[in-house]
Image (cartoon, rainbow, N blue to C red; front, side):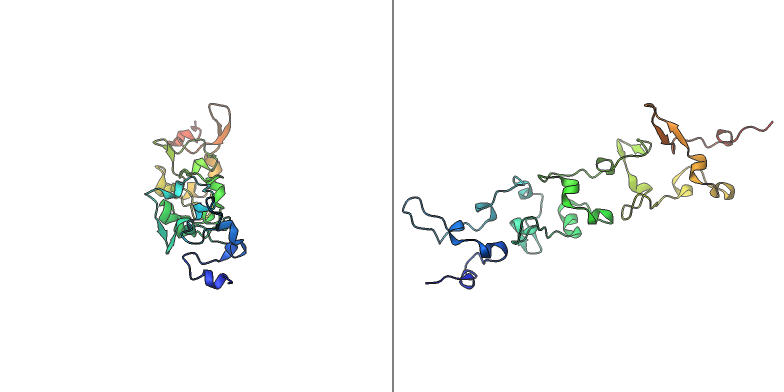
Length: 211
């Protein structure tokens, strides 16, 4: 008798992807007691044949057990190769509550989560250098999105000087370059960093007194 892929499709485990080229004996192993191969009652879960490199991290009750009708490893992977991940930016939002937008949507999983896979912190400074050296840290955290467009690059600013500071720019000040007021100052370690805050708001803080 010949049991081909079409016949296998009538079982609880249709063959597709890399499984099509897998030898029968790789899954249907010999029964150590009688020497016959087991064909009924074979475990169909991925972990029956494959190690879980995530050590059960994705089985946590707080995570969705199904995504778009996919369960188990298929929530993220297909059967062609484990390295092929079928996640979308929206899946990431559903799983983590952290929406991937802009440059984050283009980043590889390992860029943030490493290998083996681990939870990633959500604050910018955990992955990106804080070039302001803590000037904008509040309650132990720096929210870069107060000034920068998270969906674009750090060079794209959402900052409005009049709205976001206590120093309204009048016509004369609005014509100045940022670097005219925000100059490099040494930190406690002697490192030169552009000073944004605290910064004086009185005329005499920037202008010499005329005599």
